[in-house]
Length: 203
Image (cartoon, rainbow, N blue to C red):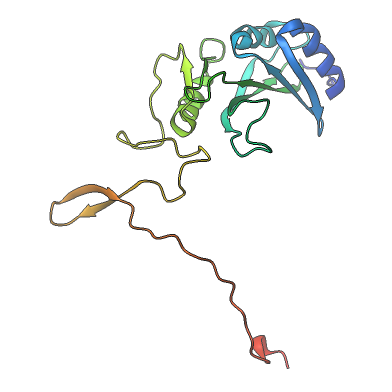
């Protein structure tokens, strides 16, 4: 059974820092939440420590997502573009932590898979691969999960156009779904100016 009074964010930050030792590049507390950043080379080992170490015991991975920092401040966060953020929960100690790792190569972002540490990472990592193009080394079934089989690109990257590259529609003549270049034209949003004196029934 978990403690009646879980550790404060500051106490948890100290516990995580002590458990990870030199593997913790940075541990911060903001808005009552603890975030720990580790190097890509330390990512799997840090995950195991957070799962098993006394005072941590993060038995459950509740979320994992990719992040694209290409438009952050001067264009990068800590000099890197792609990041994986993992949210962990300790049911027994009633506490949470965010684990972040930055990919070393912007052109070919790769980090280790955590699927062997927490089974729940499986589909989350597939989603981050599909939407951000982050490769999870060691994942045994890394394929797209949300986009179509022949989809080109990764739609959550900041440089991916909002209209996409292709559109699909049903062609009644061919009696099948076909792909074609996007026909949507960028739209200018012009605010509507209302000049009627009695607009909305006001006199």
